[in-house]
Image 1 (tube, one colour):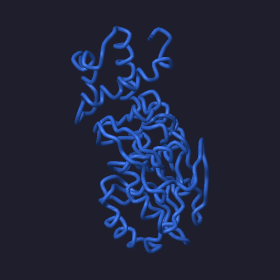
Image 2 (cartoon, rainbow, N blue to C red):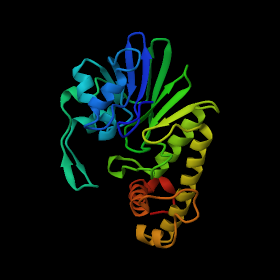
Image 3 (tube, helix red, strand yellow):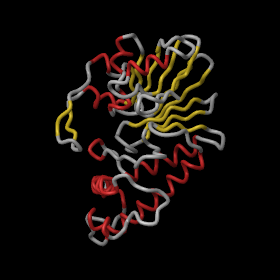
Length: 265
């Protein structure tokens, strides 16, 4: 795991160069290259897999793409990277990245490759954080990179504008739990490496939030009502911005209201 470039970058050294999961934050590419040169393979990146489209995971895409790296991502991630889109958090439009930064290979459900002696599988995590999230499973090393679908030290982020919602995140965490075992090292996009039991703990906490908020929806509460009623009280974590988290979950719930329960209309 390469840290020091804001969010985590996972690097695998193989006989024919490096494979990366995510490419760091914008402005941190020079620092990332310096760190990668210290690894076997000399910093030559052959393959890059993006876990989703956010800038903190794709900041080095253009540099690595221009240098000839194959970039792999879910098809929806490529759409977001290639197209101008609105950012509701900052209330402005963001332009698509230059073509050199776009994925050169896309998948829809899953894929696999071999780097050196390492067997790697990757797959879609449906609407977990965005609509184009994926995991990357290093089968031989027993390492699972999960992007922003796990959040050990930061508020769980749900990009509702890009299709992320709490129900999708819960499904994704359950899938990742099945992929892992008790020795798997699980690497989130930000924060320390976690264990399978820590992944389960996050799932259980968010399941409590989901149950509370759907009950509140049945009672006609809006997001502020939920906050005022203490929807996050008594949980085993603190929140940097509880209002943002609850409002983002609330927007996602209404976006998928037809799948929550038949008595929520």
